Image (tube, rainbow, N blue to C red; front, side, top):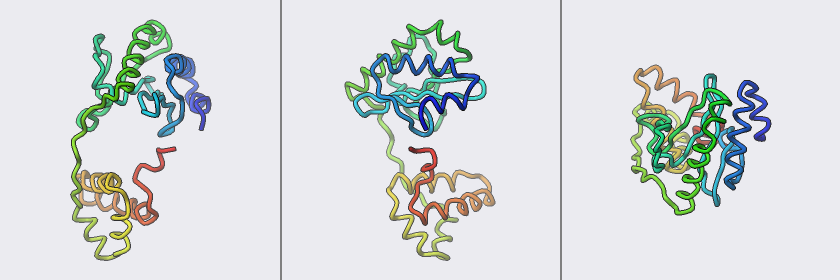
Length: 194
């Protein structure tokens, strides 16, 4: 997928997306597609993403918690889940145009933070294997072997995904969907990566 193809899938936001992309390119960011969305990096470090949704388009600052945010425009991308990511939502292309100098200043500050190597400290996650997964290992030992062949981050993603469901039925359904992915050596979120 290209940036243009992404924009074509969101015709109602095409002008807004193009303007945000223009600002990012204007600050010297390297453009690519990550997680099926336009993404911008500085010296190989992912800095900002651009996404279109039903009611808004947004800038997603990967280390946004480090931004000064003097205009108070940023919000936590997923409160309680993301520590560093912050998003800035826009409801129209005109709103973007009205705030273009502010947008550029946030992009410049993000680039400067990346250049200086600043990052939000992440709390180390621990691996807690859900009971349902351990029971599945007793039935199919190759599942356990495949699970531990994955990197630690992927193991944690699967464990959290299964265990965070409140109902047993939901945990079992998630486990069933995860089994073929684990056995094939794929991570839970491979489908979003490019």
